Image (cartoon, rainbow, N blue to C red; front, top):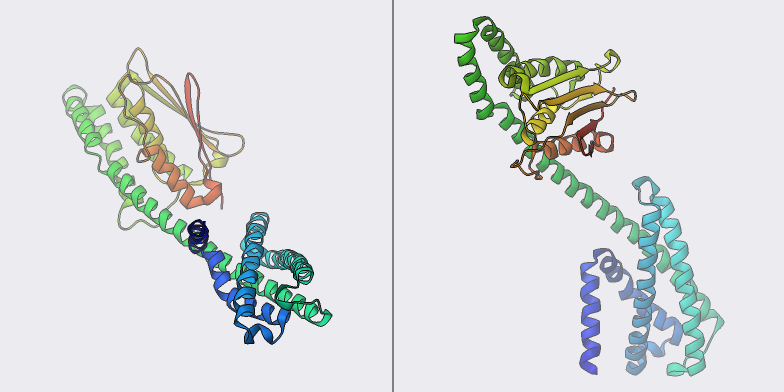
Length: 363
């Protein structure tokens, strides 16, 4: 039985150590609260009689831990109602009020029980009761302040962790973009198509080289060492993607058709560079491209100022699996990092269509 009790306390204190907020408050409050309350209850005999000191301290410690456990439930509840940084005053006020109510209620229940049992010679005295109440009110106020300090620190640490994760995602995102920039498969396919065009249609080959140079000029401008910004206008992205589309349509001929329907009103909207290329490549990677089953991709703006990229679904039998490292997942991470909640990308897959809806940012 004794071993079971010790095992219980070991698990309890281990849980407190893991909960840094709880452990932080206990370490700063309990060492002085327990002896002060003991002295207010039993007077000078509390320190002169070892039996009273040990027994009274142990019982009061258990009661303080119970009160603290209830207060921690309250702390979590209030933090969920007022989670934002600017709501710290409201959190402290409600924590103090509720802590005080819980602590004072427990105090009066305990005092009446002690008086009824005459525990260690305890007797109810008005002056000691009032001082005990004032002590618990002070402890409640200190506890509320410490809870806010610990909560603010936890918020700061969480924000730092999220920032670090977003920086890591940004590095992975930039690496993915660089991979797209120097994609050997794309370059090989372009050169292969060019070699055929040179002999069969020199005029088209000349046009092909011109559009290919525009593509790589844009890639270098948005990802090279001299890049000036992390966002581009929809107008700039469309000028680039038209050259990219020309290369694709020359390569796949009747196997692919890409249309653009964008209102001039939204051309100044900001977006992440190479967004359209990523979405087009994603459609090409996962769908069949054939003259008798052409891949149809539509790029358009919506009435609400968003950009929609839609393609018909004709999935490959063997296709590249969608993973967290895929181009579309990387694009979603980039938008979340650049625009926070305003950069949420919506994906909708139906039986015959795949649609990606993404925001345009207007400054």
